[in-house]
Length: 640
Image (cartoon, rainbow, N blue to C red; front, side):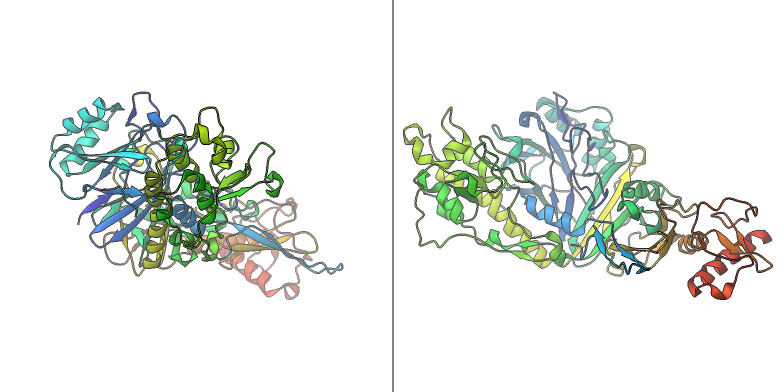
């Protein structure tokens, strides 16, 4: 079987200035696709994300790139199984997939009616329902030698390297200001022996960091794989790795184990704030051994938003357009919003523009709202409409100076590239009234602007919609792994018999008249808490309720199943730290079912109002069941 490796962000292979691609100033990804993972509601998803789609004998990989720093010092090495076709990806596509599959731990509150007839339900988060372009070139085997082809793809220059001699690849990297350090030469040599090709990527001269966009790699292969061995050169401890798969069925790891976390270990009272810690512990349990993935979602891709506006944009309208009509045409196609009175914009900040969340700001008060403004919630599976004006209607140039904002991240950078403002004039002033500066106008490349709109905005969005229409199933997996554990590259395969994996859902906190709580989890388990208590530690409940080995084919082999032991610990906890002894008497016990002295403090645990001796007939069936479970556990321990 052909192994097709995903792109790899190699922090060890950077420019001689020593700058690496990273998620934020505080966290370096260390050479792969990583993010902070779930934290509170919904979980934090900053960092690199990678999406695989297998199409016959080809694998298509979409990579989100996060970079802060000098664009001239950006460098990236991508090892792939064959000479790749590289094209511009859609940032909104990746964002929509992330939003549709992100775990979120929420809860509602219900109160017993008591004497005050109080009954309310408050929602505290939760996920509800869960919420390619041109410019690639160079596909094919190509000649052996250091440089197979070069191409400009959006804001990036791509050079494909292929050689039978690893020194030839390393020398080229060194000569082109890539610093090859540590074990990198040996690892590169290993990839070379397997006939891998390396894509060396830098930003085009003059491109800004605000122009960075996802890249799509399409190459021959059958088995997606993340090259963590090479990543280990510059990886950090407990590095987060998240992968997504679109296809007809669920995907699973083959040479890494699969782990299912126990929801009892997640702190629902803080809406899953300890999720990353739970996953970290789960992938390190026996039989997982630090090399395992957790499936965060596996199910229909219909939850991912399809943005239909891309299908209505028309780049041809810009091919020979006069400069004075550019802004009017952008407005007609909903790629820009302009107004003459700044107070017509409720977000106007008083400095010539508006600030909008989710996007990168331009200069002079013009701000991007993100990849697209007004996008529908990704979790609703809906479509976003809108689009271009009637082609028969010629837009009129504006008469008065206006204030403008742009509804796609790339609109302002493309204007700056193909219709640059005169020296000394701000973006806000110039693009708000281009005709006002007729005597200072610079050259306008309308054909280049139209081609860039098509390549960077329209084609990636259309392709994203096509992929969602042809791939009905989405899988999302997550792990945390340290360099010492990166001894082999994780590979994946489709598994039609593997069950769906739902998002965490919403728990219900039922509060009684004394302030005690019963937390009803989405899977039906109930956790009792006394008034004011935090989430219980539940000693004896493993972070991993199951560990499975899917292997290359066939049914998974179960290596660990802690379902029954978790249920026993929960039953003991829910007994309120009371249990029946061998004489049928209700006695105080600790969280593990061991009898406590008669005068032991009762300040902790689930407080029950019991007489001594207890009137068992007065207890609810649920309480009797909990007591019986605790009693059985206690008697088993005494027999040892």
